[in-house]
Amino acid sequence: MTTSSEFWDKVSQKYANKAVPSQDIYEEKLARTQRLFDSDSIVMEFGCGTGTTSLIHGPHVKEIIAYDYSPKMIEIANQKKHEKQIENVTFEVKSVEEIPFHTNTYDMIMAHSILHLTQNNEQILKKSYEALRPGGFLVSSSGCIKEMNLFIRGLIPLLKAVGKAPEITEFSANELIELHKKIGFKIYDAWAYKKGELFLIAQKKKLEG
Image (cartoon, rainbow, N blue to C red):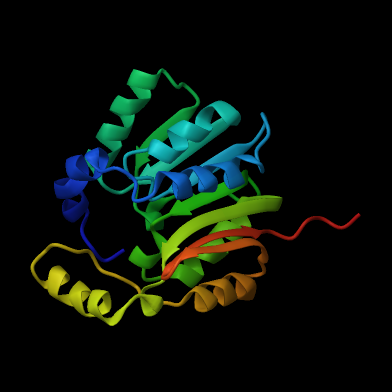
């Protein structure tokens, strides 16, 4: 990511206090994700923000390691972890480029609200594919900027210029889906729950036999 972590440090507390845009949609994303878990699942999340999603999923899996490159976001995540007394979720400060994507390690990798903030998605998806165990899942929620209305698309550069928005990568839902397929993923679930928003579950090829 080219945007410095200072942007996210500055907005971290406001971000933590902000309610999700639609609780019903968020809960449906959680439910679709949790159907893929079992008690032995090992999960990684990158771009975890203040840790809400990982902490909700923690009781349903064996272990989650979650990364964000904003120290302030991770500080808040650890506070929430302490308050909720959840021991199997670990938070670390790392950019996507710094994360050790260990080969064939994870049953699931989560990337929520992050792929439209990264500029090297093909490389990130390749690393994610290699880090998943056969049959593992990459679960993401992404803003598909190319499908948003012209007002929002025109506003983003102005907000960025005055430090009110980070660097944004533009793609359509179909472009993101096709990029996953190019890497080798099978599309397990694609839910365009509103215009310009895509919840995607992609699966690594299972072993034969």
